[in-house]
Image 1 (cartoon, rainbow, N blue to C red):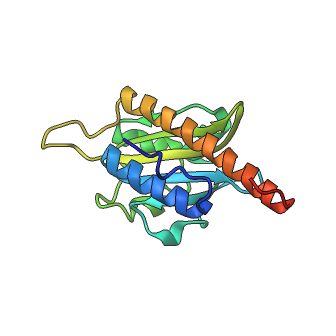
Image 2 (cartoon, one colour):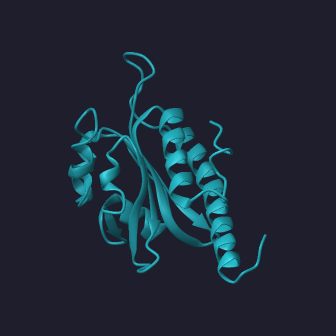
Length: 178
């Protein structure tokens, strides 16, 4: 999965994240890819900033605290979460799971993997995939440990580019050209 062309800090943040979500969803063969980032105005909240496989109307509308749902767990601990059993979703008490599932082709969560977006020790968002699409009938419809590891590598690259974009924004605000 090649995403280096999408990771360009000179593009608008929204455009870059949307392009990454589309490419990751396609590359991992999933029903949806969600990217949450820490809210600038309130660091205790994380907001859906990019999504592929669900309507754009959900962008900037779905928020989590570190106490809520599976996304909150990723943010609170800084650790990946992988769910392979459909019945396990009920125990997460996720406030947005039903709203998201209503827009999925399957209408439900069957599998999930989410990883933190980090820079150093700071977790500032999450990258999440919903419902692996089998490559052929009878093939696995859940995410593997290898999928999780690769997603962690991607999240590291995304984190570095987001930090670069923030740095360029600060430079532009103070009138320095890079």
